[in-house]
Image (cartoon, rainbow, N blue to C red; front, side):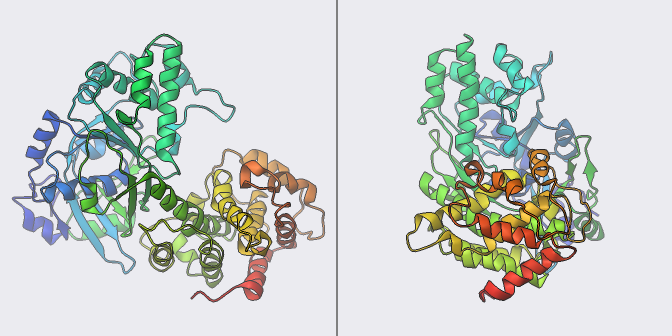
Length: 548
């Protein structure tokens, strides 16, 4: 038996017996160097960081290309710091779960310190510790994996969240919000030499660096208005030769730790394999499981230098290329297929993505969307091949039964996603004089199925539990009077407000020739039980091309 805290250099064979690769570097030496001259801080100590960012650092240290590790900060859940960092000596085990059932297991130990700082109260020790780190000229970058919600300052009505409003109205001494915390740390850095720094968002949404910059400047300018900071600080944050906000495109499915993986680790003699459920409903463990495929494309804008990320597979490039790579993923080669599977998977009651893509109809659907309608118009970022990307997705990633992803998880917040997932491709067809958006068949079918999803009734005519969505109540109300079991009813007035809404799809779908087609598909799916599947099969039989 072996524990994650065992001496991995002295007991290398015990780890090897459990199938675990270990580092060659001294964790103690790396931690000592890091704390003396911190170089890299990361906010968000969850599963993605432990599977991806920590791996990059560990590999670079092992290769002699990085002398310092990472200081991890979590503002969401102190139990993460206590239960998976401090408890396990800041180590983590990454398990890559392959489609054939095999695993690659690797121990990482690049984290020099793990700090929790929630809303600051009378105990300012964590805040002062972070200020000391941010005051160091050696600090080159802070990276972030805090989810898109972590950057949000306002609610749906445009009002500041209460913690943000509190921070804006008070001096930057005891921040309650994580973005306010960041600006407080940057203010301390500004007052102690104003040395450059890069703030790199690696969260999975478009133009993530711009969102981070907007949040930082919104708080800083509010503080300026209230007399807490001067224009010089705003100028510092606005000058990308001083403070940069590089864009990134990241892609690696990293679900919660799996019971199946836990059991396999225990079977092979790894003791620290139990899952930990925190009070904030986070599931963590000493290990993290992730898929083999991974992509990270980063805008190379680091005014104080950076680690040699490219030596561990990170694609360093310019801003336009990052945007193209992101658009390729979000609007063509991944997310539109994911969203289609999420919508259909929920109302057809699939329990996993991997089982859903084994269904011939579902497989054919995503082939038609990806290869037939998206690929012909997507812009090639050159640093990644769109066709190779989608080939890997369809043939390796989605069918992997050892990545426990579900349609219901992906269906969350669909109202926020459906426009970008399909609206950009529709716009490409509008812009190209050689193409006609009315020739699209499967994208409008998915939109029609989303409308059917909004009714909250599955293909068996039974109510289902929708995934969380901030606009669910409003959208559900718009289709609430539509009757299941009647394909001849007039649905136009009920759904025209959605389909004509340019803020959702970028176009009035009636004007570009898709609205009536969507209405027709939607009505077919109202006829009775099984008509969602039958409508899909009809389209596949009549309009699909062979991409197998």
